[in-house]
Image (cartoon, rainbow, N blue to C red; front, side, top):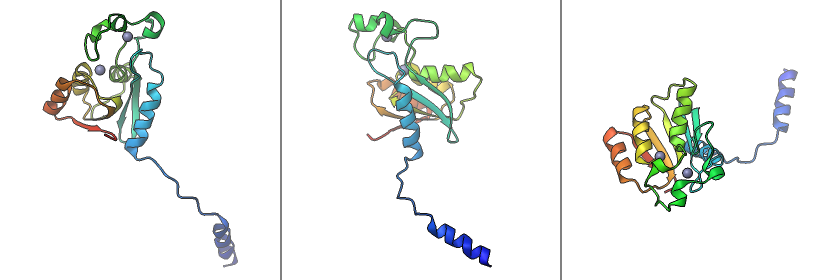
Amino acid sequence: MENKKEKKDILAAVPLPEKISRPSWEEYFFQIAETVATRSTCMRRRVGAVLVKDKRILSTGYNGAPRGISHCIEVGCLREELGVPSGERHELCRALHAEQNAIAQAALHGVKIEGSTLYCTHQPCVLCAKMIINAGIVEVYFNEGYPDELATAFFAEAGIKIHRIGG
Ligand SMILES: [Zn+2]
Ligand SMILES: [Zn+2]
């Protein structure tokens, strides 16, 4: 009896925590995507992607050159030199997109990403959209818009849900 009372007193002495603000799961994974983007080696935009299933991170990627190949920030980017407008002539750049790298990382390590959700700092382009569809990703969250109507149309046709965070 005395023991029980003692225990109660100890608990009473523990100060109540201040109200802690916590991000939602969407905000949490999105913040991680923004951190991943800081590793980007693209001269134009820094993009980060995180693949998630059942609240677990399966893979991450940022935009940059393939392994063993010099980055645009080291040797320059042909798209930049030629002044190619946004959304055109992707093939001139040596970099893979963040979404492509996240999918490739999963393949490299044998991680199944079917049924996963993509959190990406930017709206995927049409090249990435096609890979996202066939990789079995079912939902996409992004923040920054990207001018690619074909990508949006493909996602709609394939039944992939896309959401703009904070927009
Ligand atoms: Zn480049
Ligand atoms: Zn892309």
